[in-house]
Image (cartoon, rainbow over all chains, first blue to last red; front, side, top):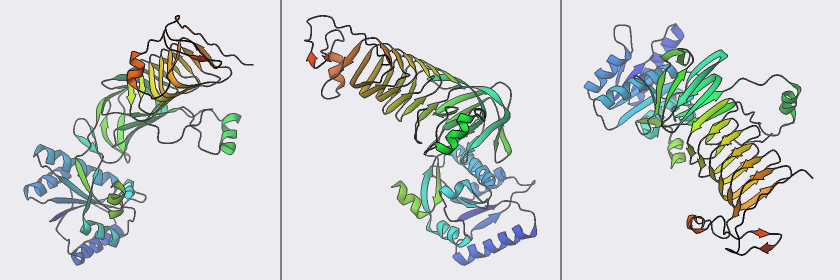
Length: 253
Length: 151
C-alpha cells in the first residue's frame, strides 16, 4: 500500500492541483494513505508513523527539496529499523526538476502510470553528517572565493572556490574563480569548437571525505540550509530504490 | 590549451594543491599541483602549468606540465612541447614533441604489456632501439639522457 506525503502548499491553484491529483490516484487504483506535514506533525514523525503501520512504499509529492527531505527521513528511520529494502516514489512539482533524469515526463497521468508500474532503480545517495541524506546535489557558495580543505583517507586537497557542489554520487565539484574577461577568453567563446576546460574547475570522486572551510559556511539544497561546515561527506550507494520510468531501468540493464 | 572531453574521473583544478595518493579507475586530469603518487587505470593528462612530484602510472600518459618523478605508461607516453619530465620513464610507446624535455632513464617495453615483463627487466639492461639499432642487453649499463629542443 502506498503512503503519500504531499508538500504543504499555499494558494488555491496549488491546492486544486493536489485535490485533482488525489482523485486521479483513486481512479488509477493506487490511492493509499495521504498525509500533509504540518508544524504539529513534521516529516520525521509522519515517516515513522508510516513505517510503524508497515506501509511498504512512500511517495513524496512536491518540489525537489521536499522529496529530498522525505527521502532523507525515510532512509534514516528505515536504516535504524534495519529494513532491508527502502522504496521511494517521487512526484516532482518543480519545473525543471532534478528527478527528470529518472522521470522524463512530468505529466500527471504518466507519473501515475510510473507509480502503478513500479519499476525500481537503485539510485545514488550520499550522507552528510550528522543525519542528512542527499538525493539531489547540495551546494556551498559565496560571491567571494573561499578556501577549503578536502581530506580523504588517501589525500588532502587545498583549494579555493566560489561554488562547491556535493553530489549524491559521491562527487565533489569545485568551481574556481572565472578568468578575467580578457581578449583570449572572448576569442575562445567564438572560435572553440568544443567547450574548452579552463582548468579552474575540479572534480573529486570520493567514498568518504572531510570538508573544512576557512569559516563556517552553510550547505544549501534548493536555497534551504541543510547543514554547515565542517562536515563529513560520504557516498552511500545501494540504499534507496526509486520508482522510475521503465526506460531508465532498461537503460541501466 | 589542452582540450578535455567530458567524463574525466578526477580533475584537479589549477587552484588546487593536493598531497597524498590520488588513484582513480577512470581518467585523471591535473591542472594544479600534486605531491604524491598519481595512478589511473585509464589516461592521465598533466596539463600545462601543472606540477606533479611523485610517481605517475597510467595506461596512457600525456605530459604538458612538469613531472618530477618516474612515469610508467602501459600503452603510451606523450610529452608535449611544454612538458618537462625529471625522472625515469617506462613505456611501450613514446612520443616526444619538439620542445619537450626529459631528464632521466628511458626504458621501452616491447611486445605485450605484461607486468611480469617489466618486473624482470633491469632498467640498466633493457635493450633500447636507437636509430634502428638495438643495443644488446647486458653489454653495458644503459643510461640514456634525452633532451629535445626546439629545432
